[in-house]
Image (cartoon, rainbow, N blue to C red; front, side):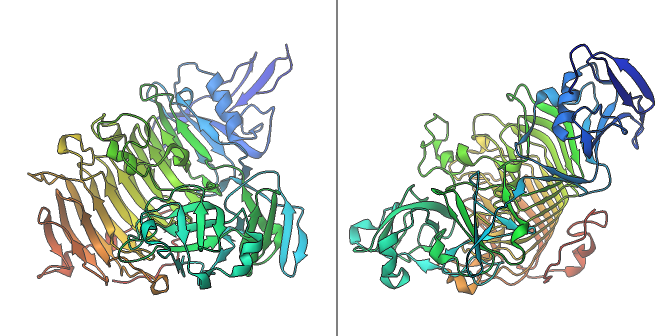
Length: 619
């Protein structure tokens, strides 16, 4: 709070006007809906840097409110509510909350959209300006920052690519890598191409900004890598990648599907852009107005992080806020390539292959070292990477009544720690939440909700729609002993999954990996009242992998009960599992009784605070 040296500051609050020197006045408490005393403060786009947080003199930003409350650490006697007025708040730097911002003495601190859900908007992007006509319908401008995704009027632009995608909703079509030399089958840094796929004239002016997006692994369509190209050899027909891909590009059954992107020569249709990183220039062919193009400013909008697992941020809530736009990365690979690659000694070094590398541990909202955090009635859209990312030590985080759409990677990801080194993540609740269009930039391994090495969680009344791969996944590793496996006692109920597996095979809309690996398989994870629509991949992608499934219990995947489950059409099995789970009333088995399905309760409830996105419903 700004003040001149020696100048008294008059702080006005609800029910009280107090003259203080350099401190924050707590408003007179009023009753809350739950009967607990509350103290209200205010933030508004029309607020002032010299505001005092009162309704008449609101603060201008959430950061200003946070700093004022942080500076005033008297014993908390009420639930503090920071009322954020409707309007747009541009976020040029991640808004960080630490243990210093926690609720105290049994009280909470809540930042809420005062005028209703989605009305107070935190924007992690700014308009691009200074556009000049380049040629035909393409414009260009100089930029002052680097970014890796772009938007026009709330719609993600496509990095100029070859071959062009057939639909904004699909990732295909693809080219296929080949085996250029017999001894090169295992390589991960040289991608051999068919001469007819890459015109010879590209050789003369190879673009150092070019990238490849590839489902590495040949017929294993499990992960996508986005990697800058270091160069090309047009005599032997291969590209050199600046970083190793997750898997090699050819196996005995197939080459890897891929497309090339970020070269000016590919910019040939509306909604595509090209970034010349060296010159700091962006080229764009707008769908509509060139004046409505937004470029990200941050990768994370809200970071909620205690200093250590022993010093957690806690009793903090965010209610009704809309978060729109965040950035991606210059290159991406899912996890480390080999066990032990992280460089740290772990009881199960193979888990390096499962966990995100440090450079990719972020979301639009990133939470770590926390306890009792509520994320309610949020609207997240147009993220570069994860929507909500609960990383490592978190306990009792709740995501509810929220809408997540057009997400770069997973909608909600909960990633615990290394198995056998402490159960540090669990007892989370995800409920009454609608998640659609996930994996827009990372289709490989994309999920609406992904839980890893975490237990005692409740996922209920959830809709997941439109994913390249999974709807919901629960994962550990098949090498993990049961006593070191924390993915136990999870409950999934009243779930609706549609349009999963759109760009992958060897998957299930509901998927588990290595969850219960040794006998006896105690039944301690439970799934009930779940409807999965058709799981059919895009034929234009020429999928080389095995088929799609409704429920896939992979590499163990034991210790589950399934009750009242319905799966639509698939290209493989509706249910694939070892004989180590309990199944009651599922439509892949004889005697299915549809009358036991509580269709009216499946998915989000009537209390969902946002209009439901349009969806194709199949049952």
